[in-house]
Every structure is written in C-alpha cells, then in structure tokens.
Length: 452
Image (cartoon, rainbow, N blue to C red; front, side, top):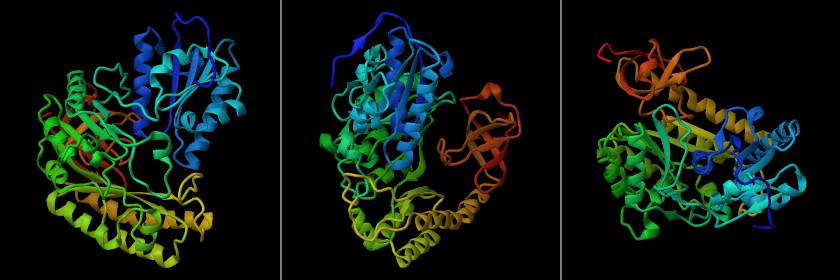
C-alpha cells in the first residue's frame, strides 16, 4: 500500500457498479472482488447512475486494451462528478502496472487495487485519496472464497492457475502477473462441484498457460489428471480448455480431452506465427516444422477436434515473404477459427527495441487479409454442421428477441452462436438437442428437437 487510505463510513452498505474489461481471467478476478463485497453487505447494480462506487476492472495487455481502460475510467469519472460522495476504484492489470501514474494523471480515482490485492477490495471501496493497494503479483483463487458468478446461462469460467513462466518477447504479462502457480486438483474439483451444485453445467478452464497446470507442484501430466477428476463431477456436462501452449501440451492431456466424457474436443492453442525466423524472434521455441507436427498430433489424438488459434502480424522483421508463409500455413491448416492481432510494442518487453519495425498500416492490412483468408474456411466448417444433431446450451435472447445457444464447439464470446427458431425460455441454462438447419460465415441456425 503506497499511502494510508482515508476510510469513510466503513460499515455503510454501498451500491457497486463494475465495468469489466479484458480477458476471462480478469472476469474471475472481478467476480471474486464482488463476492467479497456482497458478503459484507454491499450490493451490485447494473447501471453506473445507480451506484455509490464505480469500479473499472482494467486490462493492460496491449495498447488498444489500455486505451479502452483509460477511456472507461474517464467516462466513469464524469459520472462520478454528478453525485457528491461517489467513489471511483480502478482494479486489474493497469492498477498493478501503472497505479502511481494513473492516480497522478486522473485525480478522480479514489483507490487502486492491484492484481494480487483482491482481498483489499472491500477496504478500497470505502477509501478516498488515491490509495494504492498492492499484494503479490497475482491472486490465486480457492474453492472456499466468495464469488459472484456473472454468467447467467449455466456457464462459468474456472481459473486453475495464475502467472506464466514463458519468456515470449512480445509479452509483459509475467512482469506483473508473476510466475506460474497452480491450485491443487482437490481445490479445483471442490469449486467445480460447488458451481455444478448451483446449476452451472458448463465450465471453461482458464489460465495463462493451462497445459502447464500442476508442473509447479511436481505433478506429471497435471492437466490430464485434472480433466479426469472433473469428469466425475455430478451435474457437470461440459468442460472446455482455454490457453493450451504448444510447448507444454502433452499427449496425456490430448488423450484426456478425447476420452473424458464431459470434456469437449475444443483446442484453443495460440501459435502466434508460422515463419521460423519470426517464431525465433518471438521466443516461441518452435520452428515451422514443429508447429505442423503439433497440429498433426492434435488431430491424431483428438478426432474431430475444433482447433482455434491466434496470430500476431506486423511483428518486427515480418517481411512480405514471412507473411506469405503464414498465409500458406493458415490455408493448409484449416483451423476452425483464428484471432489475428497487430503487433503492439510493449515497453519492458524483449521485442520493444527489435529492429525492422513494420508500418502500422501494413500490419492492419495483413490482419484484414489473414482474416479474409480464414473466413471461407470457417464458413466451410460451419456448413458441415448442417443436418447434424447437436447438444446446445441455451444462453438467452439477442436484441431482436431471438433465442440462441452454443454447441460444444462454440466457446462463449468468441465463436459465434446457434440461433434457435423456437421460444425456449424455460430451458435457459440447460443443454438441449437441436437439429442444425443452416449456417452463415459465423453462426449456426437450428430447430429444437421434439424430444426436448
């Protein structure tokens, strides 16, 4: 803590509005903070105009995310000014990485809560004067902790570890999230059982490096052991794995994904590039041949796997020839989905001072070109679903009132949805049988089976 907080009326109940930014790991942190606040008698509200305390849970991954965080802080600072006594609290990665700078430049901020100081959130919402709460670099959840799950469709994220031991040259996350640290299998399973008991039927496992789960605890094939354990959780019908690293993904983990009954054949694996020289500059420890062999191994051990990956274009030294090799790789690999980011130079990263920068407009053109190249491939995979019967998790209605859900190969927020022709309000949060009747470039369409 950088300076002593001024705390006003610590016993008073507060109405809290949370603006959540960034990744699902950040979402879990926000749910833990809100859970602690609710346990102390505070209230979560949906509108900032209703709130006594305005909270921004920030992301600092790349420049675009940081700008979004700053814009949100400034917008809530304007809302704060409309009512005397309101407080503005900033949490998350920007609070951890830029706490002092933000409080100096935005004096409306009453408190900052770093990524390792989530326990301090109840004190922060009663603080004024720009106090900064800090702890360790990250906060490892535990099954006994209060948590307000914000998903309402029978789905939730489950964070199994924190931190990262990799040294990718473009990334600074380990500098403020710390080294990799795993929860125990029993603790993760206990939280899974509690969530399933509360009606959650789908769990999405998240970490900075999910496939390294348990290594810090000396576990051999820790992720595989965890998946087999989660396969025995009553009521848990769907488990999905996110953030599988190429260098830590083992055959045992792939075998578990293929064979544990409630684990879906969904592989989220960030490859970042396919040109050997760019991979070397990125410190990804994989050449092009190794990347191809990883994909062969996945498809051999997990038949029918949906593979999603992400790439960075515009990395220093990426020539037209290197980008061309990436395009050829995407064409031949036939991923179900890809995400493409333009390189963001991060101060403090090993890549920050690399020579041969790529013009920003060129990088944007390459991003758009790669996404356009992938579009018909993704559309083809979706078209193959037409005529199939799939289990769909009913999620809700869109702005036009149409009900939708997700198949096991449609991850929340990133992979599109399955629109349903029927009204299924009574089945929200449940898995139902659906006949897929159509597709477009991003979504599926289906009819609910009469049996449901």
